[in-house]
Every structure is written in C-alpha cells, then in structure tokens.
Length: 147
Length: 398
Image (cartoon, each protein chain N blue to C red):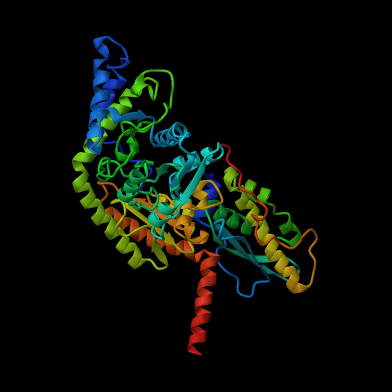
C-alpha cells in the first residue's frame, strides 16, 4: 500500500518531539477525522529554521508526511519553507495512495500554521502566508455513494 | 505469523479443501445434466444442503446457496421488500448492521421504502423498547444481525423473533459472524430468513447461503434457470458448496470445545489488556459476545498506525479507524455505541480461532503495550492530556 520511503519515515520518523520555547508552533487537523499534526519551529535571528520537531496523531501516511515535512524545512529560510508544498512532500515520499493525499495537505498546513504563529509573535508578515484553517477538512464533503 | 482477524476471514480447514478438489478436477459435470456423470455433483449439493438445514433445525428445501453473505443479505431484504410491497413499505433494522444490510436499506429508501434504524445501548445491544415502538401497521420486515462483526455483541434474537412473529412481520438475521461459531435454531428463535457465509467458518470464499422459511413470500433473486428452486438461477458453485459443507461439518463437530477454548482465551486477552494498558476500554458486551471477539479502544492512538506496527511484528488484526474504512469517518458501529470520533479511531479488533494459543496472545499483548506507548509518545493529543493532568495535579497540591 505504501512506498518504501513512506514506510521508512513511518518506522524511523525524523524529528519527533517538542521544542521548548519554540519560535512557532502550529497544530492542524482534528481528532474527528483521525489526524492531528503539530509542528514546532526554532527560527534564528536570520530567519533560518534551525530546528523542527513534530508530534502527530494519525495513520501511517500522516506520520510519514510529518516526518518528511520536518526534514524538508530544516535548515531552510522562511521563504524556502513556504515552498514546501503538499506536492513536494508527496514527491519526496515517492507518492501516497489517493485516499491519503489529504495527509500531505495536513503537513503543508502544519508548517504554515507554525510559521503563522512565528509571524504573529514577531509582528511580521510573511509573503504568501495567510491565517491557517483550523480544520483542513472544512468544507470537504464526503463523496456520496451512488445507489 | 499470528492471525487474529478471524472475523474478516478464516483459514480453510484441510477437509474443506480436500472436499473441493474432486469437483475442480474429475467431477466437473453440470449438476443440472441428466447423465450419471453428474450424480456426484448433484449429491454433494444435496448433502451440503441437508447438513446446513439440519444444523439450523430447518428443512433442506429451505436452504438456498448464494455467492456469500452480502448476496444473501441483498436477496433477503430486496426480494422480501418487493414481495411484500402491497402490504407495506416500512422496514426496521439496526444502526450497527453490516453495510450489506445498511446500504441495501438505503437503496430501498431511494425507491419508496421507509426504514427505521433502531439504536443500540453502550454495549451494542439492540434497544428492544425502541424496536417495539418502531413497529407500524405497514412494517413488513425486521432485519437485525445475529452477532456484530466488529464488537461481537450477540443480539437478543429470540425476543426479536417473538416480536416479529406476534406482529406478523418477516424477520431476517445476518448470521454471517454467528453461523458455525455458536448454535442457532431457526425454529426456536422464530427466524424467517438467515444469511451465512462459507469463509467465516473455515470454508472457501465466494460461497454462502440464505435460509428462507417455507411459505415466506419472497421474489427470485437471479432469473434464468431452475437452480435453487428457480429462485437463484445459475450453475451451482459445486466446489464451493462441497467445501462449505465440509467446513460446516467440521465447525459443528468442534463447536462445543471451540467455544469453551476461545471464550477462556478471549477473557484472558481482555483481562490482560484492560489491566496492563492505561486509557483503554473494551468495546461491546462483556458476556453477550462472540467467543472469539475482543475489541478495544486506546485513547490517543490512531488505528492504522497500530495495525502497521502490529503487522511488522507478524500480527494480523483490524481496526475501525477512518483510515482503514477508506473514508473520513470511523466505524459506524463504534459511533453507534456512543464513542466519540477520536476514541473510535483508536480501535483494535482481535478475533481468535480455535488454533489461537495463550502464548500467541501473550506475545500480542507484550508488543501491543510497547506499540501503544510508542504511538502515544508521538501524539499531540497525549502531550496535551499529560500537560493538563500535570496542571490539575499541581493545582490540587496548592
């Protein structure tokens, strides 16, 4: 079902944990849908992401996308981190099954939410960043079965 | 490998496989043919029909072979609804049925029928008061499962059967999880129709049966031949029927011992999990449950993650989480017993067979403890919970 890369990140997730006094923290998803992702960022004065940690409640794909997302933003500038889209996360993982694509969206949203938190705390605006949705499934309707 | 997903399917017993082989090789004759070469095929069909009938306390001519449980459920509900449409268009079922029943009912709702979904209590047992209140003048069918596939709860089938009989309503039960596992007497329980599936009791897949009480008004399901008293046309799945017959004989032969053994092991498993893993609950009734079924919910744990970790330890299990259902919602059964979504996502179903050993269960629980703890340490929900607990404790101290 999952690619080798997904299984690798699921089995050996990178950057699991918390950052005390993080520069920015973002939590997205909801328990109702079965996945919650929290990303911690440590950003230095030059605007470089020095460290990134995550905690995730969710399926195999949710854990793997969180892990990959932290890897992709670590050491990057804020603007570079903004380029880490769900597509980039998926590609880095050699793809996800169609039903799991929303997990990669969650990873992108979690990074954005953490950056938003950082921007709020420092009174700055980040180009291209808007207030994160608290629930990524908002407005998403389950496909109706055809009888 | 430790296989604890016997509610999904079971390992075919050697005698079932052996019973099938001749009908896949030398005895390939069409059972409908006249020549004596086909007698073997005819005979094995009759023999299986006789045995299944006897095992249910029914008559041979009341057993119809189908392609499995889902077909049996579809047939029973659609064809009975159609046949009784002049009397009424109201059907009663429960909220925890298998989708083969629920989706069939939803289909009928789109075609002019009304369906009442009766609720269950926190253990998954049908609310009999609600069922009685749901009965109307135009109610034509009650369909309630014998035992639930996820949480193993055994329903008050006798009471339902008595009510249906008293009110002159047809009673269908999906016994896919119960047939071959526990005794069933259709006479005593006033069951009019009953669905069964071969691969749930160590037989082959793609074969099942529907018991239809003699005299029940029901339409044919497949047209085009005289097979199954012209009610379910099509050349019979002879190897499947032979295999299912052998599996049924095996299951009834070992049933008493199997129930005793599985119940003891199941209780051992439940006791260990509940006492050794924190923040866990047992789903389903403690005693009114299938001998081989255990179903737990672990807080702060998502089911699919748990299944992958178990798989890597060689353990086959299942979960009612959204990720395993292919939708965003967790199991409708777990929601129906009142579990919040986040708890339902963390469910784990372990279903035993007569081959399961205590050593296997010890290995599973030992690994499960580590897996649950590992997943919780990665969960932001657990992190919040621990912090909240800490805050409460320090407040308490002050």
